[in-house]
Amino acid sequence: MHIRFTDDELITLSEMMTLACWATYWNHKPGAESGVDRFDDMLEKILSRLQHNGQGQRVENDAERQRLRLRKDSEDGSFYAQCYDEMRNEIFWEELTARMAERESGKRYGMEKINNMGEEERKQLAEPFVKRFWKEFSKMGISNLHVVARSGEG
Image (tube, rainbow, N blue to C red; front, side, top):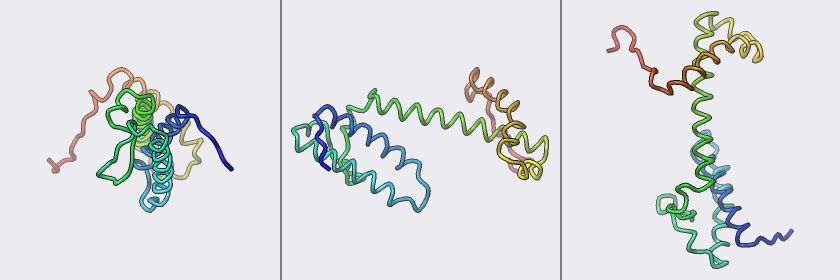
């Protein structure tokens, strides 16, 4: 199969692949390096094609990773960088809220009971805590979060 892209489409594709590569590079499990490499190889191929098509000013070499990349100075404020930042922000708040709600459910009902429930039951039980934490975090961010050391730990 042979697909032809305009220069603008190739730039869009390189931005999409950059976003995908960032997500896989920073968020993969140990042992998933071959998957990360596959994504990186595809991006490298697209960026090489950009250079070949006379769009080399959009590409630079990432010395740390020994790979081509879109120019760092053009990513600030770019759509794909904004998407990545938004994704990371949403994941942070979702995970923080879910984990804290799970912790509170475990305190109230016991972890043994929680662990023996199905996922839907656990969600229903945690829902009041989720709502409480969302309300707090929406209003205050992390301002009111504190780590309390256990007795004797400082």
